[in-house]
Length: 286
Length: 56
Image (cartoon, rainbow over all chains, first blue to last red; front, top):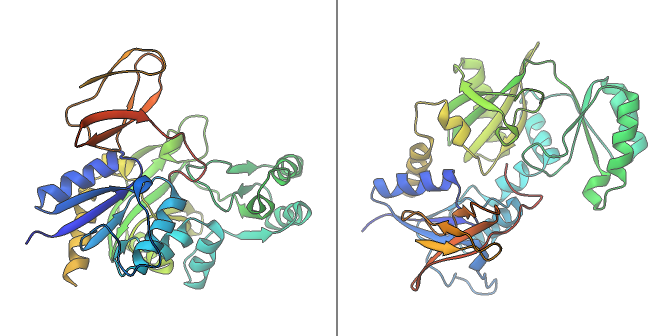
């Protein structure tokens, strides 16, 4: 009997197409399930749909993906990544706490609950600092603050935004680094690929969604050790660990749960989609 | 397959290998559509607009 796998999605991007291609080329019976059409009856012990042996959760919406994973796991299904991993990676505070707890080097960071304390934290860390939303993606609302004047203006604006999470201020040192960071693709206990993400001209953020480009990055022992430790710290699975090259060594600033790998693939000779599917197969066999 | 844009009436070309959930864009007005493949064949529905929690 063929191995069965479900791809849970809400939008099919290049990445999901590669995963579908890879799984089918390996003879896996893949079912595509659009999360937008799903109803989870929580009181029933089983789902009305048959999801197969592993569910690959690839929703573009972080919230949908996390909540759907929790529902599927409650029915005893194996989901990649686990809901708890998505939850941690989708929140910068949870991620940072996990990284620190595990002894993973990470930039100096403070959390405050009022704009006044956020300004004090920025002073204490020392300008320039970076203000990040606790929950957010593609580098949106990530702001570099060069001095007190800029910080006062931006923090005041942030405090005017609706939503309780906007009233929590995540202030981080702006690490002295080259105009690039390193994206590591960790799958299970293996660092599969590492690429530099080079910021676009006139942009300091390195996100590929912001025009950042990728280049191959050699895998050193230090890089591998830190990437694996960071992945384990958030609960493991298929992860994108982002690091910066600081004067004092590598620092992990983010771990992504539903990793977008188009940029990394363009600078890597290993098929990332194949590695993800192989890992799903390995989980089934375990 | 070809479809018509509900906004501007332009022809939208849906590649034969398109899969459900994939996005196609109207070449004239730029409106995004989601491909839906069902028992009745291929159709297009307006795509969701980007939400704050999208992406990594």
